[in-house]
Length: 459
Ligand code: ATP
Ligand code: MG
Ligand code: MG
Ligand code: MG
Image (cartoon, helix red, strand yellow):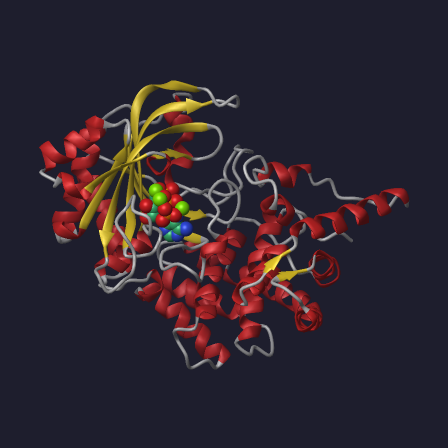
């Protein structure tokens, strides 16, 4: 089954179960300053769960474009390292607004996977929240699911879109990709390896968390589910990694063709294929590369892609050339990608050209520093110089460091940054106000790295 066919099969299945098909919303959340980018299918229904945005339907289904590259859900650092994480992905979801609850949600998911998709039942594993005996009982008694393949977890089975907003316990479905792949079942020590891959999260929306952290019951218990389209496509296409599905293979082949690379397995090709999707869709949704907030996240992703192209031997701008392949692959579902293709190419090309001017010099500086390096940490002043003079976002430098088994001296970098800031305040230089950036980046939960990389290049 092709990826496009799976998307359609999902939406059609839930339509037959009385759900209204709702189009994906923008990657830029409407009226939600707590959220950097749309990170789940439920975002556009947040207020419907809260009871303040009633809809003409109480069951909905969607395929939502999502970006997880900052804020509470950030998978940027996972791309290229796991088989299952992207910066951009589509989340298939069915929703109940005070209509059905756990029993039906579990039944629908089971029916879709085992009847519509005809997945072998013995490959499926389930998790439930530690407190949720009811969900486990439904799995065992209603569905006949073997109790020995159910684990009860805590944080991993409590879903929240951000620090505030709708949340609740969840039950997740995993697919066992087989003993050839290393990794243990959910809840075991090595469950983060990619043998048992989480495909579907069924969230039983029951609470609204307020700014003080307190949880209030929602007006009506509801359901929010999310299944990664690329992950179910990998299962359906009999491949282990998302990067092996039809859609990604097309992008990888296109990138390899443009760059003249023979090794289609090269990790940098995966990163580039991932990044073109988030970058092109972000521009389509009105984000432009810049020094602050969303624009700076976009810039960081483009620059990472350009650096990976450089690693593969790119001699000129290449990234923007992938937009046409993406439009061919995804344009039917997302016509705006085709309509805005020329604008997207231009925005990416401009950024590529701008970064190309400093990339080689920056890499030279880094290589010189690495030659003299004693120990496994790149000094903070080098990280700062790369950022300040050569436009290397910190996560890009970290990406290079990680490939070589090195880390960054973040404290030293911070100190260099603070020193420069106080110097320029003394001289009265114009400064960008970064408060917005920090808010968007959700600096409360991870104060070091994310907050740092949220800072723009200072002119
Ligand atoms: P994981 O534990 O694998 O990081 P998650 O628990 O963070 O996933 P959820 O927030 O539960 O993911 O999102 C619902 C579903 O969306 C997941 O079950 C998965 O199928 C898909 N998904 C989540 N993050 C990504 C991603 N970065 N790339 C592709 N699919 C994703
Ligand atoms: Mg995750
Ligand atoms: Mg998970
Ligand atoms: Mg999950």
